[in-house]
Image 1 (tube, rainbow, N blue to C red):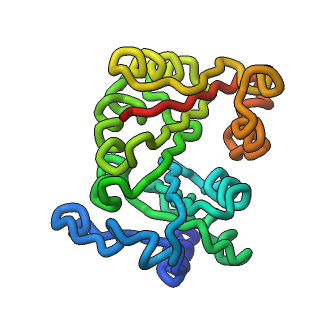
Image 2: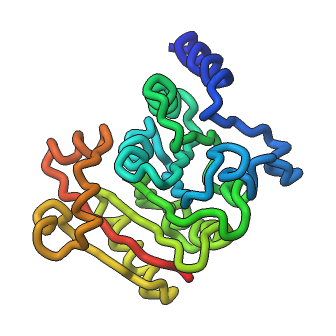
Length: 226
């Protein structure tokens, strides 16, 4: 298993769609693509969308193909997982998706003010006993606020009642703008949801398929923090 991880890490170093910054990029604020993702990597001016805690990158890959005029960046600390999505993107020559290996706590070290248009949180750890570690807690929202454009959107898709309810509580407590919300995504897909929302929910991660097969109900919301 260790050899397999080392092989994957070695391969990723040669792929132009993978970035594994050193700690200097965080402590010295010298990551070269900060503020320059479109100019120096994607070579276009299309909107940038992040998937935070992307795992194997299934959602980043799926969204990149559904929205070819947007740029997607999957972010995760687990390099062996990122390798899966990055390898698919390399093999299929998907030019509008990249991967960044880092802790989400440091996300503002890698993106400039107003550089990001949307953020996706897909099946994040619900952190049942550590609410401040939830990716929709005020601790993280303040980091997202530093990089999101005015009016930028945050999406949450989860099987967790705890995470979903706490997110709705955060939205109300801090006067974020709730745009859409459902406690049972797939039962309401053809009824109450926006057409754009319905169009993309054929994209499912490995974990989502696993949760659904076990009878879990999938929740979804999107909101603005500014």
